[in-house]
Image (cartoon, rainbow, N blue to C red; front, side):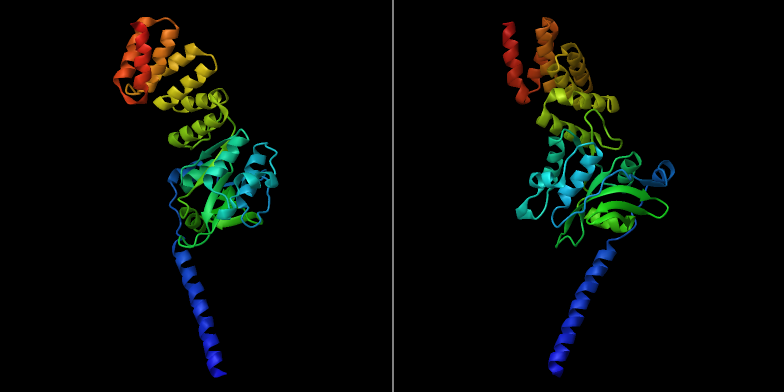
Amino acid sequence: MNTVFLKSKTLSYARFAGVFIMLLMLSACARNPVLLQSTYSDLPPQVELRSVPFYAQTEFQCGPATLAMVLNHQGVAAKVDQLIPQVFIPGRDGSVQPEMLATVRRYEKLAFPIRGTMDTLLGHLAAGDPVVVMQNLSLPIYPMWHYAVAIGYDLPNETLILRSGEIERHTISFSRFDATWARTERWGFVVAEPGTLPTGVTPRNALEAISAFEEAHGPQATLSSWQAFVERHPTNAVGQFALGNALYADQQPAQARQAFALATDLNPEMGAAWLNLGLILLQQEEFDAAHGALTKAASLGGNVQAKARLALDTFK
């Protein structure tokens, strides 16, 4: 009896030690993120987006539930049951990021990945945008992936407010949240209407989000988003080029020509912009200018070179 008792007691201590060590490891990662001074001075001290609806998340279905919350907040009548087959991957017991973003686009909204900092996250909340965040609630070697919706914060108390799991208003310290968020490389996104560009989204993330929307819905449906992008980033050559394509698809060749010309001014090495500019000039029978633009495109190489040379053959 004593042997059995001692063995059981030893195992009990072993289990306790294992859990205790894990808690120590988890706590060691929970350090207060250093916020910019401008975050404290420029943002409201407290924000809570109470209008964001709540749907309790059952096992492995936090992805569909979080999508339903942010889509409903944008006026989309999407139900959790409708979203499950679109994002849930049974073999992975959950949803992965590409399916989450693609599902937003299927409902004709844009999904903008955010810059992975607490300052940016709080800035989006202050601007009125709930943020879907991905967390790892366990250790990196034994991940427990989880999606939640950040809906508010309290700067003086350094706490974040989440719609998470079965808790409608889950408050968590900045430090504990950031520890779980960091294990996903601080991945998150906001949802926006076409033609709007959330404050704080980087130019690269915006370009990728709008391009993905364009691939799903076409350039005409994306025109207002490219216009919003170049209004925010007028010196971005890729944005001007994309705007030119959308304007041309919308049967606005004169405005498209201006956008392509500006793209070549901003980046003289952008062969695709020279090619499209040359083709429009050719259609408008401005042959000398067209020849110059197409010659420039042909000289830059890349996959547009053959098209530029083919267009130049019309001058022979």
